[in-house]
View 1 (tube, one colour):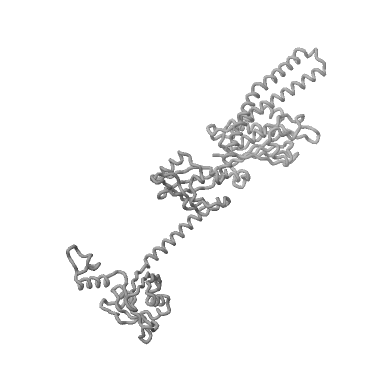
View 2 (cartoon, rainbow, N blue to C red):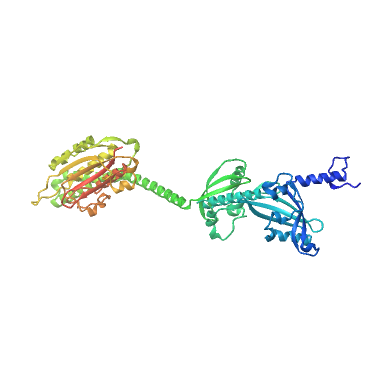
Length: 534
């Protein structure tokens, strides 16, 4: 007896009878997880040449019975002999109906995927229809709803990830390893880019997907070793790189991903240029400071030595040869002495200005009452000579360098005493100077301090005012008076080098404070100094 394919599946030495084979086939048919249905065509007038008008069930396995009868299946139902339209009345209007007819008429099998709703749920089925005997049709189908749900879920996740990827303000590029036949890493290839990257490279008119990393950026051996190491660790690499093909600087983060890596790049070209400009400025400042230090050395030694000799020789001429000098010669010597003295004062003031610097280590809480009193003692002779009236109110303590603050108030008080006003009769009016201070309110703070955001750091400021009854000045020149060598009045009337208020401004700036003045020409002046208290 010839063995069938099914009997060949039996254990060696055992041959199945025809009945046994039929029973096995029946079990396969009944318990298959796929739906299996046998149909036979019903033709018009039962004529072999008549048109197919319906299909009649020849058999259906349990899976097909459950799907056909849905909730009414009790395990014993049989639909053999029933018409297909008894269970699916509207099937005649579907593409599926015409496919069934085509399979029977042509004898060619067809594969169909269809969807329909059951209880508002989308059901997807993949169905194979094959000819089965004379006018017969064998249907085998599998429900693929789960696959479609998974596909939709993956599509939503892909859409979400693409949305996140493309909404990133940074350029993102995914690279995959390129290996030779020996599986050795030789390069990386672009597999994915986001919208930000595409915008960055849009002017190049070239596609980057598929390009090798070395086409975009020349790799040095040590960088390739670093990337090779990245594939075997969870280490994150952070670096700043200039990409020649884009002519831009980037802050790049590299993360391992499968057999490759993700590069996230932030364009820092503008920030890099600003940093380079800042470094250049700092270098120029260092050079300027070095030149200033050299000038200070020259001013303190080389410039002052000739001046000392001029003054000394002038003194010798005045003291030892006065009788031999004519009146005009004596006048020339006197002018020479005056000019040399003025030059020496100028050099000394310049030297003092150049040496001004702040050091946080020298800062402490300074009692302005004691400091201003000491300044007044230093200027006692000037106060006495000018018959000045000096009023010093209670002053707050401030945070600063006592030595620098002493220079500040010495210059301010000296100015208040120096610029005396003439009365109507041409007599100098005795100076009256009032020095007062208090804790500044937010309303008191000048815009310069608020703009610098110093006041927002929780610091309190003291405001110190020095008010005099001197000649005053036009407020149009307010900025000018704090500039070095700027004078509003001739040296013939008022002595000085034009550096004093410049020193005041620099001292205040070192303390992160502010200085300004209020005045009207002929009506005195009030200088306001804001200094931090902590």
